[in-house]
Amino acid sequence: MKILTTITVKQILTEKSKIELYERFTKRKEELKRELDQLKFEMKRMEKSKKYSSLMLQHYYDKEMNDRHEKIKILDFQLEQLNLLPIGTELKEREVQGLVEVEVGDTWNEVMNGKTIIVKDGIIQEIKEG
Image (tube, rainbow, N blue to C red; front, side, top):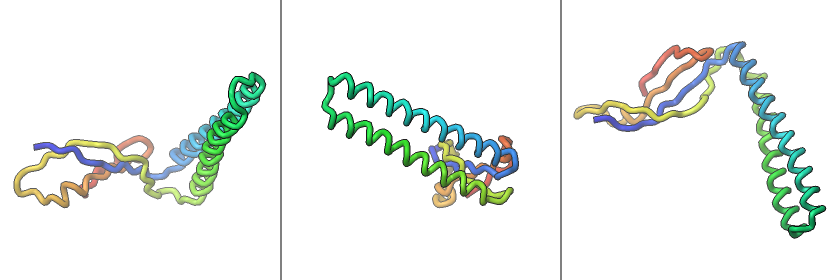
């Protein structure tokens, strides 16, 4: 019988992956800044149209802008941490779902501990049990 289980994917930090992560974080931060500018522009345009309540508009746009500011703060923190991490560090990248074969007599805890896939520069280096 096969069951669905969670598989952890970890990335080994290399010079190449560190640069890629830095670029990804920086690019996302720039996208968020552009979204903030767009929200400010939209808010002013909506206020001029006078079709909606000023208070409702202010509340909506404040919430949206605060969300972006929080995401930027998180990205700043991640960039700081990335600079501190030594090459060779294993970073949890994501979790994926996978099928695992189970049979009578298997140890349940070992089956449920799942597997870990170790990736280095986009190439699978190791698959660990439990």
